[in-house]
Image (cartoon, rainbow over all chains, first blue to last red):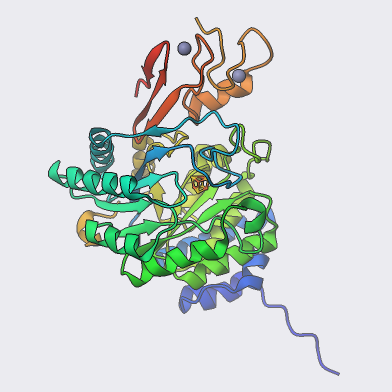
Length: 338
Length: 63
Ligand code: SF4
Ligand SMILES: [Zn+2]
Ligand SMILES: [Zn+2]
């Protein structure tokens, strides 16, 4: 007779495996974390925070983002208010170069080191790329040395090379959700097509920024699946969004992710991705309110988007900067990123 | 005069817009012109927003 294998508590295992050795949790372990009872959330967040401090350090990376081209996207990502396929109130708009320069300056003035230029497109065309090129040039001529990231959809190899030449140091392209759930969320392109772009970005030497949205009808098992799929990509940054149910989209009546569940997700993602820049992105205001944001910062998050998002509004930047000061968390300086 | 809800575009005198007001108070810029209910062209930037109605012109955040 063999004795039943002793069940090792997942947080004990994580302490040894993730905190001590820097090896992320596997899918089964992430799922166990996502299933922890509410009363163990403080313990989970404390461990996730230790992991973040140990493997990433105390600094918080601050970023601002702006939409260069809004709305009218031909794709059908069901969460997105910028898809032209749904009766969303978001109309198409282009930001001009002076507007882009101003947005970059506003961002730099907050102490942020990252500025991400985003366009609602399947992939960039010539006009968009030349707008980005002119925009980056104008931002530099304004004396602004902030690091510039782009998020312009799926890329060809040629476009990847062009972006590198323009000085784009990081590229954002979200896998959005678990591979097994993706076809329920997007039908106009595949998870694999997104993966291809990410691979080219990495090979060209740009930093890879890839995350997704929690609360799109995925199961906890699919959330765990997503965390380890992201880990296998070894992204430099993972932006974690919580669904904002936007009017006109197929997900407009989806419930907002509840605070405790969101915190468990933050902790679990940190334990799956010990070395990644894990960023609070859209939806945290709706999901957490002010208190939860602080708990997330003490639960594995080490980066935030300050100010507004693309079509939704965030808290005023100063409120987040005050929060970081209160938490005695230093903002990553530009000199540390070069 | 706010004849129309700038979140949902429906007349403010009809129905309950408290959920709309809540969204407008912290997470959404106006999307519909409050005078004529046209969808506005809205640009969100890191520290504010502008919203333009083709008939009633542009409004901006106070921020
Ligand atoms: S590709 Fe991007 S902008 Fe277009 S619908 Fe999908 S998420 Fe929205
Ligand atoms: Zn309304
Ligand atoms: Zn009007």
